[in-house]
Amino acid sequence: MTEPTRPTSEAKPADTIKYRKNGLTRGVTDELAENMKQGWADTERADLAPIPQAAHTARRRAELSAAYPGETLVIPAGNPKVRANDTDYPFRPSSDYVYLTGDQSQDGVLVLAPAADTRHDATGHHDPGHHATVYLRDRSDRGNGEFWLDNHGELWDGRRNSLTENERLLGLPCRDVRTVLDGLRAATGPIRVLRGHDAAVEEVLRDRTTADRDEEFRVFLSGLRLVKDEFEIAELRFACEATARGFEDVVRVLGTDTETAERLIEGTFFVRARVEGNDVGYGTIAAAGPHATTMHWVRNDGRAKPGELLLLDAGVETNRLYTADVTRTLPVNGRFDALQRKIYDAVYAAQEAGIAAVRPGGMFRDFHHAAQRVLAEHLTSWGLFGDLSADKVYELGLHRRFTLAGTGHMLGIDVHDCAHSRTEEHVDGPLRPGMVLTVEPGIYFQEDDLTVPAEYRGIGVRIEDDILVTEDGNENLSAALPRRADDVEAWLAGLRA
Ligand code: GLY
Ligand code: MN
Ligand code: MN
Image 1 (cartoon, rainbow, N blue to C red):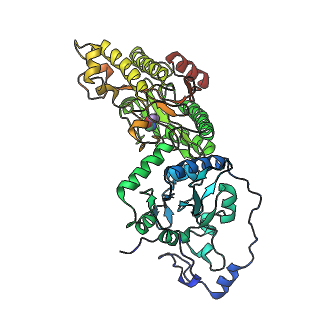
Image 2: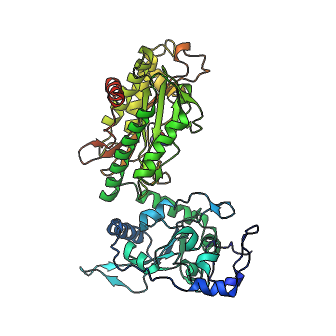
């Protein structure tokens, strides 16, 4: 079987670099080829300081190293996916690669090779150790024309860092990614690879890795990210602050007595995400009226009407790729009506109970049970389950018809962070200081649900905040956005005044 071709082009002479099939400028004269080699300044930078993550990524790699003595560990960033011709889909590097390197380059590969020498630290302790190397795309060659003749040469995609510059930035050795496959072929001893990101790397290692061992590796990497360090917490704090500003932007474009397109709401938030961060951390849910009862409403092709609720679930992703995940449910005209407020207050009470249950030593599941219990009590008190008691409803899980989802999840580089980590250290484990999670109870009455009074149908409410577990309790990182119904109304009025 032939190996998949890496998208990084091997160095090749100008006359072998292919032109686009229907490109207008076909040939290259010798004169032009020669001309393009000349007259470029040396732009190598010697003034670069390490990225702020560098101190943290070294510690994270050491933790990984200690868990796999004697094994080669391969963590690819992944390759861009072609959308059409020379246009790619937006690229996002694998989260574990970002966590361990701080780098965001396409095609990058982090390799931890067992150290051949036995090292001792300053205290004389034996350190089994690994040597870490990042394989990256180097600057494109001007001598062979690659920089302008290749679709992904620097003239088209922009200047890349040289390997030396990247060594300064990332604080670890960098090599040309075009050598990575040969390097992996030459590696001896057991190897594990993070699968799902780089087909060429996986193919080279196909006979030397097993699905079980690689899955165990993936689970370990996911669990490594459960407790956030101070760099990550600062990123998440900023993500929440920028997200709050994005919500304010939305309120300013939301008509009080006119309709507002959900796409305008999505687009308004997106501007904030791109100005203050890298992107949105997930597809914005701008769900007006009955759309709010669809958990993942990202079509956003409706309109928010006065009298309806707008459920906005959106998060800014920072330039270092940490995302917020916040939901507010807002009365479009500025005031909740009586039924909207009754449902909103029930969700608020559930969220308060959930947040109160987030503390170190408690179990991850506690906040879920606390919030869902409150929701079940309210739904029962509204007569939605006949004569059944709240205890019975909760025991049978009948409330879930209207609460649909779990109450929250870990948050970090991924919006549903650490999703592959071991159940015992995550959903069935205890909370530890430094964990960050969402608390996001909701009530959703589907438009076609004949089991509820007609006036309930089509109402959906969710309130979602990002909660840091601290040494003695928790901190709500998204507290800048009001949650109580009165406070939400006052906030809307203030921004629209
Ligand atoms: N926005 C996705 C979620 O809340 O989990
Ligand atoms: Mn959300
Ligand atoms: Mn969420």
